[in-house]
Length: 316
Image 1 (tube, helix red, strand yellow):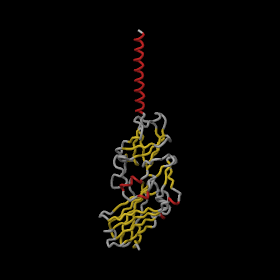
Image 2 (cartoon, one colour):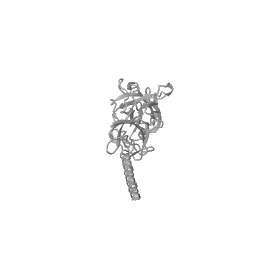
Image 3 (tube, helix red, strand yellow):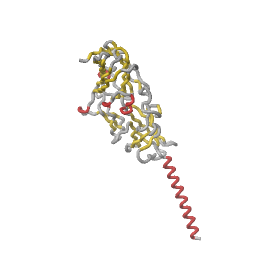
Image 4 (cartoon, helix red, strand yellow):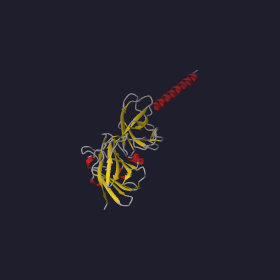
């Protein structure tokens, strides 16, 4: 009888243990944290810059973000399809179902980043191609949320830098021409910097040896019939727009080199603002550079300029 009783007790203990294990596993799976990321109001579903304009933005295969929860260390999350994200290492779990959690994230992921300092991309390497915007566009997201049924954290990323779009029209003197160089000059316009997730603040280097006041892009590109559009990411809140200059160097169809310079890119009181796009449409007619502007959707509307005529000057 004692043996039977002991056997029954053992079976009951095993059943309770299995039930507890199943409950623990169920709770662990239920509290597993999942990430959903979007840029602006559009959910990320396709390629990083998928269309013909920088408003068509989304994450794509291989993109990685850094994510901190409740002020803890940065964890790398990578997507394989632009929609599903997975953390590096073990799964991340919600601490509980009741309390609010604080989330802050950034893109692109940088090794060695901390809440106090995330290195922004090197803006001096740009070539003006839309396809490379994902390399230089620095994005952040922050939110406070409590656990919901699916355990998903929906992060909405915003641009922390500004965008300059330069559209060269295949008209006038630029027909059959070659664009040699585009130069944008302004105080700290591409100076290296770091971003503090704790303070939501961008700090640029104060070391004189590291200041970068000029973005010089060598192109040597022949014009197509549709013209050409260039995209440049720059630091916000640096130089007033009236002090930022834009210079185009080109060779005409007779192989003669010319330069055309716009001494200011906007109102003297305004500066480049993060999350805003500044678009300039250019053509050269009889030695004069004509510039106008319009905004593009996904970046907030920036400066819209009336036509400005600047004399083109042959290079010496």
